[in-house]
Length: 388
Image (cartoon, rainbow, N blue to C red; front, side, top):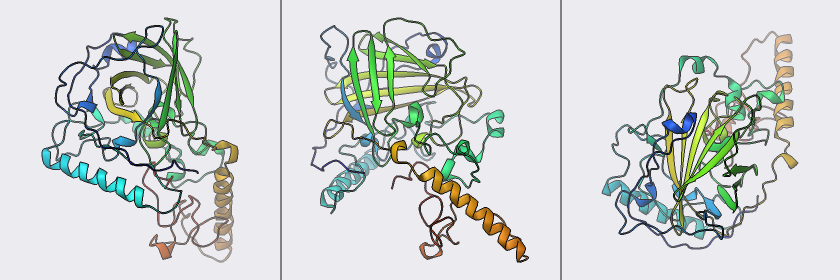
């Protein structure tokens, strides 16, 4: 995939912390916490930021924004760290690491590389509520419905039909949360506005959502969509969005992988422009079928270099499902042949690695020895990291 031309961008640190009052909305919104403006790194601004306005008077969120600068911020706070912001020592280390990443990118040879952070933020976790920065416990009912298909090609299969893969494997969607969380590339989010609506387009898998702000009600609960049904309202300079009518086919991890949520999930998003070059984005997940309590992540979105979303030709040229299914059928035949020879063995997992790469087994699939069905040798990748 063609990558953006690299250029140096100065490291800007914005100072201050603030929050807004909870905005009551029906259902989910009533339980969502106020906005945590983590872009301010824990200190107060000298004066409030005057948000720009559209010609028709709404706060102006328009632009192409990215989560690239959240590199290094984990979803959950490490248990040996307290508080939402890093100590001076950890903060200095993150800034140094960000600078080193910029230099590595600028010194890289070739056109193909991952995106990188251009500034550092002080957050210790993307999760801002609960206060410990940890995801609430999974309910017993949700644990019972865990399945290999929740991880798709990150898991061990077996894969018998396209439905055994995730919607990301199938190039359909990464879900709302998975479309914003930072991965190794493709983290752009384009926001455009018109009277009565806001549209947000995601770079990877190229989904677009329409967020109506004209007061229309949600569609009938019998209508279910992968990205749900979103209704929004302006509260001061903040856009508050409530989404219902979801399915149980998506997840909320990196690239939309992981345990699938239920179709009862409701989410509340908050968007607020807090600086010329920062939109604070927050999302509250409320799914009592899956999680013991609601939880919230908040992160700064910053301008995307080049200011355009690159085409993401995924489903249009996708051969991964055919190759993975053919690899599974090749393993079926290999098991049958071994049985004929009197050899009884366990089915090889999809992520069985190349012994030359330290994976501890021969690769499967049409690629022959050393070519695992998941497309890489050396064992399973970190979840959300198959783009490396």
